[in-house]
Amino acid sequence: MKPVVQLSFTEENYLKAIFSLSERNESFDTSTSEIADKIKTKPPTVTDMLRKLTEKKLISYEKYKRIQLTKAGKQVAILIIRKHRLWEVFLHDKLEFAWDEVHEVAEQLEHIQSEQLILRLEKYLGFPQYDPHGDPIPSASGELNEIKRTILSEVQEGKACQVVGVKDSSTLFLQYLQQINVGIGTKIKVIEKIPFDGSLKIMLKKDHQLSVSKKFCDNVLVTC
Amino acid sequence: MKPVVQLSFTEENYLKAIFSLSERNESFDTSTSEIADKIKTKPPTVTDMLRKLTEKKLISYEKYKRIQLTKAGKQVAILIIRKHRLWEVFLHDKLEFAWDEVHEVAEQLEHIQSEQLILRLEKYLGFPQYDPHGDPIPSASGELNEIKRTILSEVQEGKACQVVGVKDSSTLFLQYLQQINVGIGTKIKVIEKIPFDGSLKIMLKKDHQLSVSKKFCDNVLVTC
DNA sequence: TAATAAAGTTAGATTAGTCTAAATAACAAG
DNA sequence: CTTGTTATTTAGACTAATCTAACTTTATTA
Image (cartoon, each protein chain N blue to C red):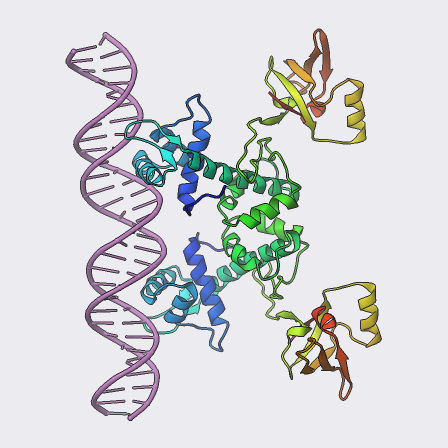
């Protein structure tokens, strides 16, 4: 599903901002000043842009009311996010940028216009499903898996999660996982986090508690 | 040698255009209308930009006179060309774009701002010396080797050139080269091109003529 | 060398994106 | 339900990059 109109760099950034702000509440909408904050502009600038995006039928909006993306607008936003995340994978996996250094450059790369480029990049990277932050990468047709992955060490105390993969796939690590009976789908509840060494006390089944090291938790991928 | 000022996308394009137009004559200069043609704008637009670039000391220019890059302007232009050509190598070598498809996308990628990105990309690509068209890639400090490489099949009838490398480095091909006594530095004059099958009649030493196939000529890299 | 053509510049207007200051609408709270 | 605060929009102005039309300078050539 290709976007019909050619959008400017700036318009793309507004759509992306509206998308991510909308995702944060039940009604999937946002406001002028929230957008202004996010984009780092002033509200009047946003109002002008809202008029423009409304004309292009990318958002639905009425004066003084809250703002929502239309189906078309959402589609565009998701494709930008797709490009952003694929570039992040490239920067991290191939150019060896640290996971917290990739965002800034990907902000620029996401606006490069070439469908071929993204399709080939995706193939070259081996059709990754998640970016280096654990966020899911939308498909070329705009499907977005909502589930975010993180490492077990970042799960909050008291929260439960489910194993979806590992970072380190060394034999030693995989053997250890088998031994303690942890695999894809295993449910884990974080009982306690020890600040001293970053280790965790976790619960696997009812009453089956276990202590695991920081290193362990850094290599287990989970969803909440 | 980093550019001092932050330049816009557009300013960068003007500098690049002025650079390539200047390269084409003895006096290393160009004119308003040549630039307008190249950038696909109208002459008055160019005049405005010339004033701006003069203020920033990137070109030397006086009303109604011809235009030259300053040392600083040349430096900026060369760094953009460096980025452009490195991206071309990436697109060709890694993403498998054909050599004639890479230019358009590289035109966009060359404006991405991140020194780290380019340094890491260069390393990732194995410090290539030439882009897929045979044009030399400037170093990070702005040194540009002026010699352009091409394949032997593209040398004009009657012209002489010198071997600098091969594309195909299979044992069979290298053995054949050795057998006919062709290596790095060998001088070759193209006597005749046979349009029928693309084969060439070449002269190696005085009176030592030889016929070689199109396939052969496509795999020998030369400079003129 | 004077007339004419070509190249280049100035003047004035336009569009996209931004701003500040002022006006207006929506909301919240006594 | 009126009043005050906050959010939003309008009005008017600015900058960068572009254009057309008109004017000026340079180059050509008869």
